[in-house]
Amino acid sequence: MSKADNYKDLFHKDFLMGPNSVRLLDEMLERFPIASGLRVLDLGCGRGLTSLFLAKETKAQVFAVDLWISATDNYNQWKEWGITDSVIPIHADANELPFANEYFDVVASIDSFHYFAKQPGFLEEKILPLLKPDGVALLAMPGLKEEIHGREPQLILDWMDGEENEYELYHSREWWREYFGESGSFEILQEFDLNNFRLAWDDWLLSGHPLTVRDKEYFKLGVDAYLTTVGFVIKKK
Image 1 (tube, rainbow, N blue to C red):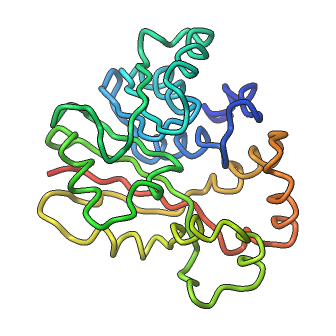
Image 2 (image 1 turned 90 degrees about the vertical axis):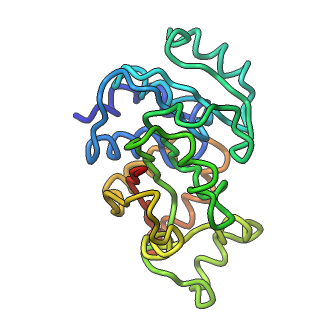
């Protein structure tokens, strides 16, 4: 049993906001374990499942940032989970983060980085300054097995009907590698497509959230054949 399974009672519509971010984070930490007790920025924490996982499984001091979910709402929930001593809720925009440079050992952004990184340079300008030397960024974002923009099958276009702006954020691992480029300020330690992609989606599809109705229909039609979750571990030099 994976560590993520310890939290399966929370994998429902009240907390999931898409493919299960705990499954994705669990695999990221299996591939790149982090030391216990580090200071971690959970960027795009949603309703805080990844923050809970980080606090419990790595004993991290977690700064949990989200723009869409109220910090007060998260704090009230986290009191029930008993993690308020180790997780600090913050409402902030990823482009205007209120932290000192070199404050964090780790920045984790699970199923959210693609929303922030619309402009080239976001990693170097907004994320790397927050990391201590040799600190790492753990990034997992929805993507494509290969670039198909401009030649999409009709199935993808139908699934994303009305969500074209979000689909524009979906890219292949090769695309992301080129996007990050090469720099003397960071090193890509690992890159991969996550094995937990389908498990994460299955949890979402079974969550009872109203938005899953459409996704279930298109997954039955095979839209997942084009999709993946892209992972990167990037170290600041």
